[in-house]
Length: 219
Image 1 (spheres, rainbow, N blue to C red):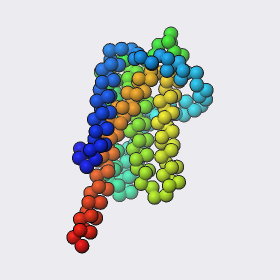
Image 2: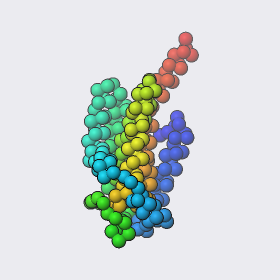
Image 3: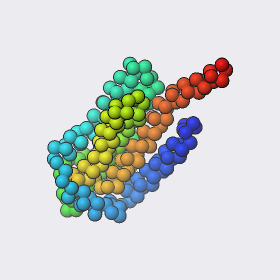
């Protein structure tokens, strides 16, 4: 894995190592340094309630898995078979990995005596599922969007994906359902799952470029 992109592989190893290390810390401590202060600062932000509701709805694991499966089917029909398989595998592993880490860490959610709770929850706090899940789906979509030939189309696809990924981190702290360290954990675990999917999906393009280079050499 990552044999043709060693830098990408190094980033993946760093993210996976950081995800594991942060998970161990979160399992031992209900909060980490800076969590409370950053949470209270985030809760003072003027975020419209409708925006937070929309972002939360777009980033549920159930919606991400369903949308990801439909997106994978569309990629398959479009002839992007390798990219389709990579995405489908990622969204299939996503809920299993996420729930497994949550249960192992078993970190309690922020308590109402420390922050204002503005939304409900039904699982342990670390990592933030509303961050980990969209990191996989919207991150993969943004990676695919970079192939668009026109700059305006690339921007029109990548910018909304990036906006969702940024907003979901802020919104979940604003709502009082996650500590900032939960958010970081969500991004790290999401990238740890996203990177292999991108690597597998990208090998088709790499193989095609190698084949074209070989044909030019033979000519």
